[in-house]
Image (cartoon, rainbow, N blue to C red):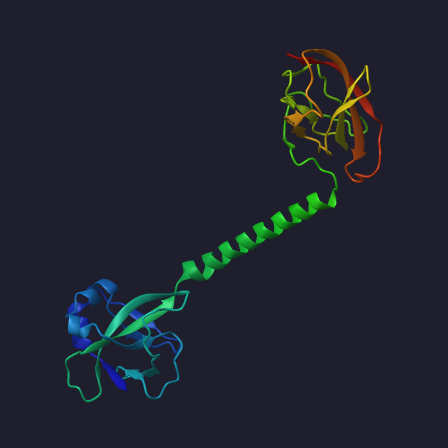
Length: 263
């Protein structure tokens, strides 16, 4: 089917001069979406789609007296990166001078063409970074799953040749309960992982053992191996240290003497 532009309909409805340039450089005048909606309903039927690239169709074409281009078959949906630019009132060959339908003009949406791939790229990058972080954690066997980031003002090791141990004045627990709320942390800047062992001085019994705790992280609470009766127990927090670049290696051990008060 051959369609011709109905210039009178464009001139009558157009509010300012505008045109759509195809890939051949030809300018096609058109109505905006708002102007198209003001047309009589019978003239708003879509005959085909006009894109910058000629469809190459010899059966569905658009002419304006100077140029001819192949139209694409009209489909209600659009490609994912397209937007509707406007409409051209047209008449089919042999139908007289009154417009009976329109050609829809489709152009590329820069927002969808640029931003959507960028968002997908950012999403992919986030997935990759998360996967790498997961692999990093998996590469270090024995990390304590309960550890979280923890910072104490002034407790930052600025000498990587040394190991900073935190002070523990007292640990408190409830009689008959295993759960203890107390912070065991590895100061930021330490060159090693910490592994904590809470040991009774009188019996040598190990009451708690942590996993590996990273520098700048802490275990905020833990469970004893068994509930204790009310009283004060002299205990030692023994600290295993393992280099951050070799978690299976060993460094100097530390010991923090303190009191476990069970109320």
